[in-house]
Length: 194
Image 1 (cartoon, rainbow, N blue to C red):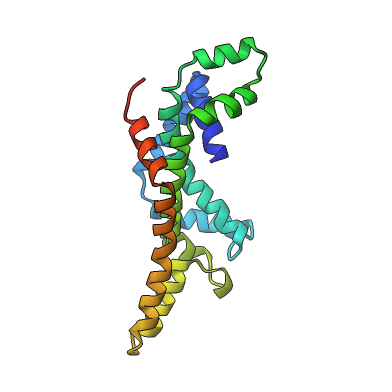
Image 2 (image 1 turned 180 degrees about the horizontal axis):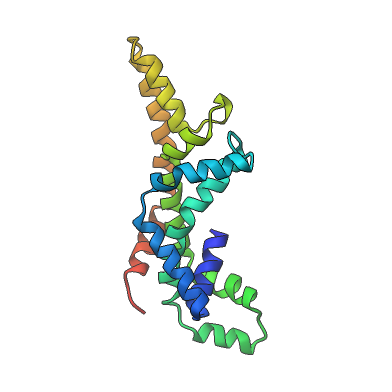
């Protein structure tokens, strides 16, 4: 979220050829499905010796979610009035001070909304985890459920499978209940033009 918010702020506030091309790059990543870059990403991660490591899967998850986060946050940050920044400049605030003391508090609903969407997407992500993780202690919940289903398919112990599904569902449900008001306010604030 920190990388996405700073990038969204830079894209919306510093309009030049570099930021326009960066914004076009972020938007263009939406047109390609994730599986298109899977083999080159695997080869690159293998060269960096990040296969089957927590750091490797974290880097992959950050990389695949940055474009969505920047796209949503830049739309929200562009609606925040520049008058707040001008007043902060007069008071002697730096760019980072403006970002963290003005822009971040004003865009909290959007940040929470993006964080929830990214969390739910990563909680259920299967393809990258299945590709980059083979050690049992590093596997994510969907991979563990897949392995449990493969074992339970030939047995009659469906209780263990449904217990696993319940364990996967409960954290997501509780997380959504906890941040439901922020999600609603973030979506509503993103749809209103200031």
